Image 1 (tube, helix red, strand yellow):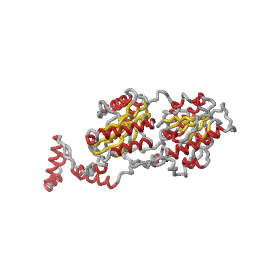
Image 2: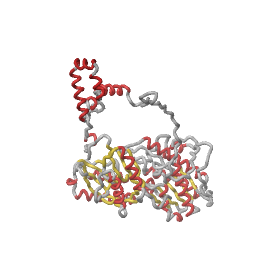
Image 3: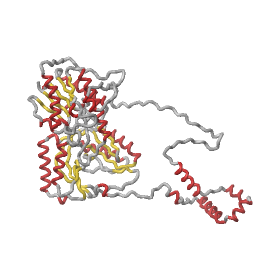
Image 4: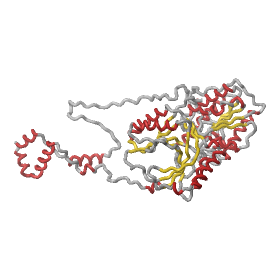
Length: 550
């Protein structure tokens, strides 16, 4: 019985394991459940056992119910093409912290991914329990307790697998393969997986993913998936609040009730006190005439000739339309008096391309690139070849589609909404990494070591054109006229390109060529969406999939 492994980048190094005869492997980085069918649609009928290891890339993007719906759709397609196929659903493995230098770890993100993975695995286990053609492999060795993953099986990035992890993954699946091949195991070709979307009286309390691996629990019930993926959720209306209305007939000044917890009463009192002392009261012409007839007014004029003179002069300025100067105490009341200074030492010597202003948000559009362990090792080797120049690895690898611009906070939502509508009209693509190249920024303050990127046709130019059209409405600068698309992998202060010899560049290119030849999968990566980053916020810009899901 021939076996076919299909999955994402966690299966990349499965060829290091001693596989049995009649075993094939198909995997691609970044692929999700709905994209798996494209990997083996032409060879599905040639294999008796199909092992699916997918869902890792679905976890951060969507709810578990959506992923399970896609998984069921994939199973139906497989059994339609090969009704006698036996399928092994490999569990979504836990994640852990990225221990690479400079990596940022979000504890809430990792815990959230593991909780979603648990629900997906619970659903797969339920589906497998109702079909004799589907087996579920839980991989219990990857979780040693409720909180900690087995770091010996995970690589330094906390996501991909070490050689020992690949071996353990293969051994777990091989147990089920041997069971299926046993003569005592009878297949039922007519059995199809039943839907897990059934109504139950009550939902079980969710438990941690690793806890679910160690002991049998009641699986989480997945809600019925009937609505379109883009349907909006209608939230229940808020309770009505009665607001007291005070009639103007009973009081010339309407009463206003406010409850602002963030305003300091002492600050409010001080502001009113200063303002009242700085205001000058002015009288109209009628009041002035009536005051002149008042003997007390004449006495006040004789007792305070200076104050009277000031008031008179201010009245003349007011009548002439001249604007009175704002008192200094009002000008400095809410200002800190400190200007934010840019300290390059805090940013590893880097200098800002534009001055920092309060209320401005640095914004950039690009395609995120998630390197696997082999690519990270290649980047380390490339940077070592540039010594003694102090090149440092980039913390955020991406393919730029725009310049970095500064926008106001209230522009963020309308700009990202327009970008999302524009990118939905553009197709997904697959990019290829080819050569090594050096770049500098516009100010010549930094040098970048980069890998050039290309794509079929002019699809990358279409991406940048879409961004330029959206930026043009806000009078933001466009991207370069003839862009050279690349992924920067390292940077160094100042323009050091003249210090790098042609021999060094050739050595760097040889390292890249050898790595691509040994691991061809490093050369290609899928582009499913772009990302708009504004300050500390990220907004996905999904691309269109003209071929549909599945």
